[in-house]
Image (cartoon, rainbow, N blue to C red; front, side):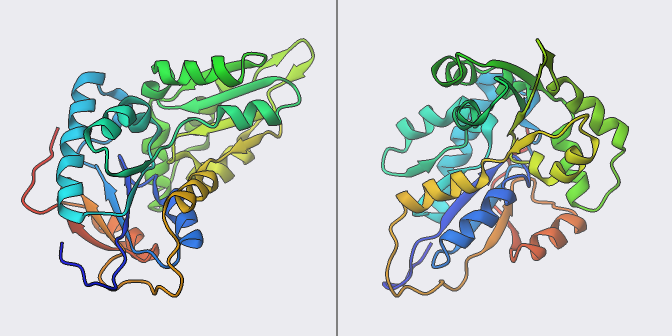
Length: 276
């Protein structure tokens, strides 16, 4: 990628699908001088059902090409499943790159809960990860934490944000296990441990059997990115960035229209095939 002397390097935001747009939206507010490249590994979506070893290798191979092609200032891995699985490997493989990770917001949930009953709504991959259980042990040992792995919510969220209808009954079936009553107390915080899920937050609020705090980590991720990416005084937003890359090479019309709504043009990673 050719850069002029006055041009700032972009920030790359990576997700398995379009869920990372929730993080991109917040990062743009805090980093207006930076261009953004949004990468969706839609050829591998959804990540939740993958076996760990092949998914880890896929992510490492993909990042080898992404970093070589786009040379970003920093990378936001806006995917709990990807980062809890491969975050350490990425930092070892690419030690000169700044990686801002996404992990379940268990620590802030434990700090905020009044009832002591917290649920973590995630993909099956994030739920079974040792990383997630270590977070609970480290920061929420005094809480009752229920891990809820949803097979279907990421797909539902992608359909919903594209304007497709999603049945209330289907959504409720996925979130119902989050609501726990124990010794007169009720769950009061649900951690949204997949960046796709905030797209459905209003649906969750409507269907919940009682009010809870749906904890969306997007703003906290963006703040961490701002801390790690230098603010260059007087810099202007660079030309030629703010585009989305799809590993399938074939995003459909509704996806391209959605990207336009987020101010992103659509392209594909050059000369690479990343079908699973």
